View (tube, rainbow, N blue to C red):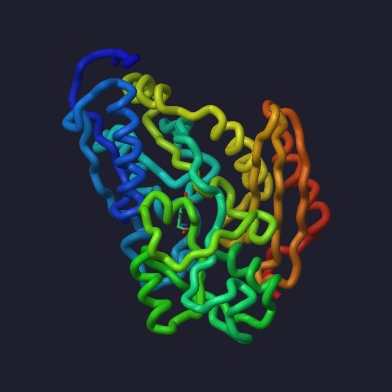
Length: 314
Ligand SMILES: NCc1[nH]cc(CCC(=O)O)c1CC(=O)O
């Protein structure tokens, strides 16, 4: 069965960042819409928008001012009606959206796990003492130092190709990538070992794609409703409530993962000191519909245990 749209009209303009992964996600969104409404490719226009995070490659993200670095320009284009919808990695999305925009459409979640990437054998325990770990993620850096206090964390940015080149050049002995990104790019050639959540709890919303629109755009609302995945929304409600209550910025190492089985939602959460000297963890379950409350309560418990200064660098 295919669906009908409010009125036949101009192509739906899909805004995205220009990285290979972002483009793959935009194309996945377009393909799902084409199928749902039996539309030809010409009914869509994919527009690449460069963001501050893409433009500035020579500095660490936290120096650039944290949140929204990969989304600000795209959201502005949507408000100014230069594009109609925007496709985002939910992992990179702030908890709140600018007025006039809504983000309530999620595609079915991909693999949530991180992958350990190295040309050395033996996984995380196989890299030499004092090894350089390439990551610009505070979470991954702190998690790695918790397990291997001997390693040195070095900043590491760029797309998959760039990161692999840096590994062969010896800039670092290893790095981490989201398995979801590798899957979406079809990269089976990367020397990656997937890490179970027990080994490395992923970032909030890892592996999830969100599609944003203007609040008053009824054509976009109808279209996005048809491709929305409700089970993914349940998981993200819990994880993002956890994040919102912790007030996670890019400078706070936070991990969290929700999973549902038999109508029960299990949430695991972790906060770490930025230097990886300590981690606090929680693990709790609730009925699926209470996910947001579960996330909020878990965040409050962890903050209580952490006390003041937990997220400060020592
Ligand atoms: N912070 C960059 C980013 N945002 C989303 C993904 C991967 C895809 C996803 O988690 O959905 C990545 C790269 C990475 O962590 O390897």
